[in-house]
Length: 285
Figure 1: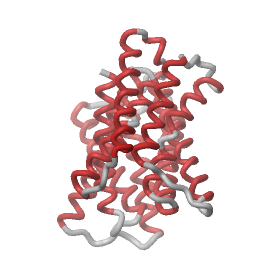
Figure 2: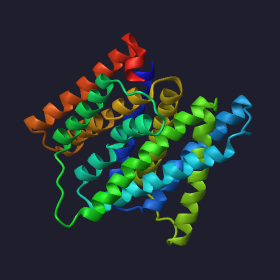
Figure 3: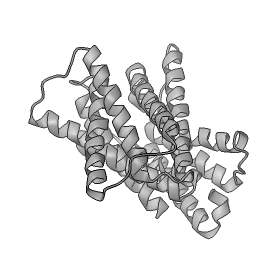
Figure 4: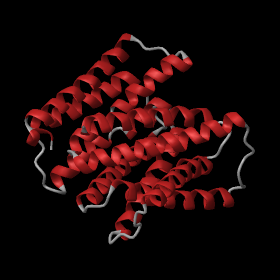
């Protein structure tokens, strides 16, 4: 079930990426952050009201910290996109699973089985082959920003994992992330000139950003709470696979043989990691 939750999250985040790509030409990053968060907050508020749930938490500081890291990471990734070719920015963002393995091993002193580490590396090689990133001589600032986005994504995942370990329900973590993101987004838009006018297509795209983002957030949070961090990290590579398929179908982007090879490596690493998790749980923990 953990693998299915994370695959759902990856698919939803890829759909959100399509909506963001179609929106960035007209809307500012602040607007996208607001709509990414606000629809999730409305949906979660409705869920809380219907179920009569209690929003009080003994871990409010941890919730704020998780939201802050996630929002800064999101903004950093958008900045990397503006400084680098898209494929390069995405590749650097997806160094997060590798950083997660290092943090778990050296900071939390959790053993990383060799086969699990190999699958993480294999999946990242697949990302490189699929996206074929390029880095120019003068792109070092953008590269540093992109790596920063990868580090922040790692910290966000670990914060979500920690909240799950503390017993925080998934809905509460998503609620606070969405509520704080909405507040940050509306302040950002207010100080940067206000909202742009929207037509029906724009509204649909921004609803897609918020809706798919919320689905992805709930699914990822569930996967992290009930499963193994390295399996979740490895399966997050699937977002790039789904995104590449959307690029092929929607924009006619080319997929040379080396890209298909990379996609096969990503899929294979995810399948092996899932099998390790089922047959020998300690191997993928």
